[in-house]
Length: 149
Image (cartoon, rainbow, N blue to C red; front, side, top):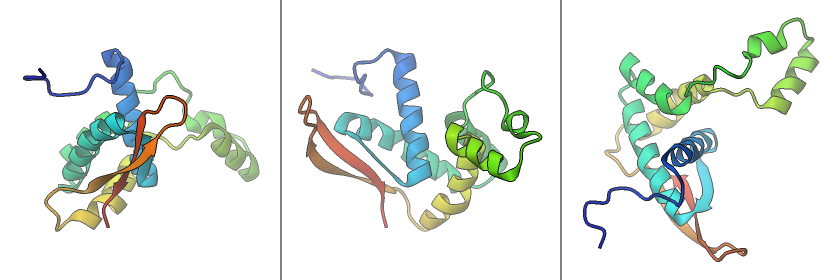
């Protein structure tokens, strides 16, 4: 029996599980949907729903809470300003495309400026899970987590 068991472990240690769910949430905010297994989609849905509810407040504390998930701490990677200093516009664009330096700050801005305002009048249920069959390799049930509307 699963009494008092709140979350799915997804067969991963806790640090790897949190990284996986954080990356799923980032991809969801960036694209508006994510295609993954059913268990992962259900766990990512919990995080994304809370993110959107937090973003609807649109104050400094809400932005800080969203940054905890979407930005994280990437102090080991070089700052984009240092990589792009002294480069031409074409080189800058090529570096940005190659390294995907869209960081969490852009995701936070996108969440607060584009995603959350769509749901100002809605009291929850911002996402839906659509089952898409089974994965070919291991027959794991797959699903798409997407925004409603």
